[in-house]
Length: 483
Image 1 (cartoon, rainbow, N blue to C red):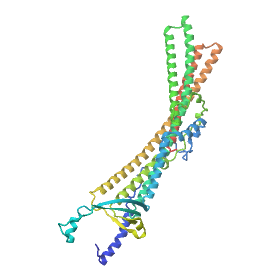
Image 2 (image 1 turned 135 degrees about the vertical axis):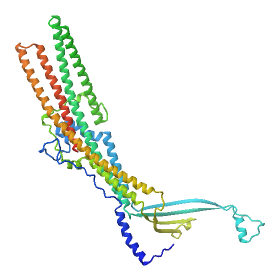
Image 3 (image 1 turned 120 degrees about the vertical axis):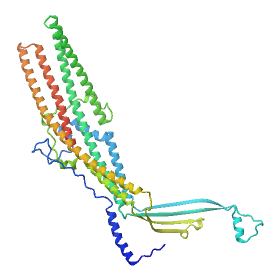
């Protein structure tokens, strides 16, 4: 059918084409990041707090060669890390597929077929048409056999008028970057967990040694008390109380030893994917100077949004959701595909050549006329996903804000408590030294001297507990600041 347009209608069509093209360019909604009003400084840090970049391999600040080696091996061997990298590799492949989606396609074919076509009953149709005697004898063929040789090439390319394929590439790029940010988040959490388990292993090993010393001291006190009881110098009640205290300390020693072995196996599994890779022979650790542990240089709240990998991943997913809305809207518009075909078909090999060619070329216009509202519902779905991605981004930022303030508050508290525990341990040492001097001069009994040693060991256990809490909060600061 040929459409005839008046001059005025032609002018309108020419003017509407650019408008339609501009409208297509805006199929993706203009998306801005949800606004979250962040403070200028953290509530739990002083005004002179230094803001800057943290060291990339931040765990090296601890000066623990064994820890550095565990992190290095774990980043290569851990199953979860390798799974994350495989997902990143898959997203890179999907990006390449998206970039190739709008490339021209050329396919070649070649074939041979042996065909048989039945002609049964064709005589009854042809005889009346040809004026032949209806009653005469006529032997009609039962069928025809023939061969078909064919080869050809087919090409097609869709014109990306509305930017559908451009938006598909945007989605692929955003998803790939989100996976990259996810890997950084997983790696950061993995590094932090190795550090946490390592220092827990160190502290539990030291606690086991302290409790073992306490058990030996209580055993010695029990021996002295048994001799005193035999002489009638102490009551049976005192003797039993002392015996119960010994058994309590010994049970605590057993529990700590069991916990220390469990942590060692957990660390070994995390790094080497097997629980027996680390043994008791590996329990030689470099000394740790906890007085030198200071907070990591934190970024100001507004910069934190740009540095935390989970926030960056949420932002990329927001951009991908926005592009998906544009892709859904593009389905309302016509699609133009250019296609061409060159083929050769022949019934015999002698005729198979350029003279038996078939050619075809031209554009095809596809326009949705009725689809039951499916496209409109698809657009609504993508818009809902876009809103959800915006809310996820906002929640991630607010969660990062809260996590940072909590980490700072916990670190400040444990730092002050660590100072008190260190002072108590120092006071207990001084007291032990004073009682030891009195015991050697004969002014104090051996039991009193041993009791002072127990008090010093109790303070040391409390200091070790505080060191572990301080280290965990210190590590947590690196994680919440984005590493």
